[in-house]
Every structure is written in C-alpha cells, then in structure tokens.
Length: 168
Image (cartoon, rainbow, N blue to C red; front, side):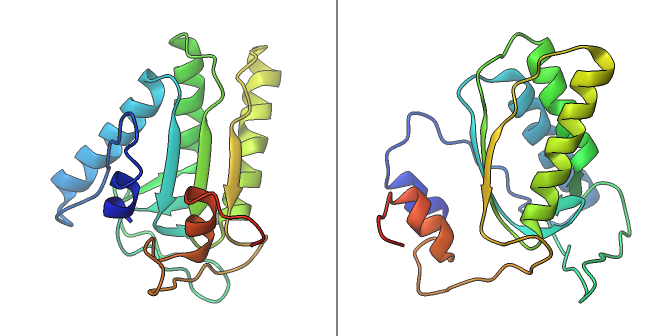
C-alpha cells in the first residue's frame, strides 16, 4: 500500500506504522499519529489496519465473530474517544479545514458512526463547531473487512478510491 501511495507523488506522505510490536514503538507511533492529526491542515488519513467497532489497531486487533477484541493493553490501538478528542484538539489548534478519513478495516462503519456521534456530542456539550470529517470505509455496519492480495493496495476498495476508478 505504501509504495502504491508513493507512486501517486503526493505533496506529503507520512506513514505511521509500528515496525516493532514493542510497547515503546507502539506508544510512539500512536502518539505520532495523534500529534500529526492535531497539528496539520489538509489531512487525508488512510487507515489500512485491523479494526473493531470502537478502535483501530496497530497490531493484533482481530475481532471475534461478535466483533469483540480482547484488549490486552492500552497502547496498540486508537479508540473512537481518542480520535474524537484529537479532532477537537485539531480544531482548538486553529485547523478548521475538513479532514478526510478513509478506512479499510473490519467494522469501519461502526467506528465511523461512533466517531460522528462523539464529535456531535463534543460540539453540543462544549458549544464548539468542530467540522465533521469526511469519512468512508470498505464495510457496512457490523461487517468484517477483507483483503485482496491481487490489488496493489491489498484492498479493492482502497484501489478504487485512491486510483480514482469509475464504475466500481
């Protein structure tokens, strides 16, 4: 996926990937991702990872058939709450453009709906106007994601979006 994105010659491509599944590396990548989102304009985030209804995982976040993931620690995933608070911090830092979030993970529509709810709640309770991110994902509510290893992105959904394919 990374080499296919680089082939598009983006203005800026920042990759957040846990190279080693150590606590220190995972905490660092999580912090780097959230810091980046809270401090940059014109952000398009492509998430190609494991996912559950309430979190996106850097490592082994594989949900069971009920969509539940056994969380063994608090550093290898980003929760809906954490991402919503990051979007709030981004807004508080003066970034009022609309971020674009593209998800290729299991249960991404569950995550997206929950994230929208969280941002709406923050706006209502704190009387803010955090812009709602533009979000799309490869699954429907309550569904597992899938991979297609014949695709250069390992996912036909990402291929259609990122290569601007029509009639898909």
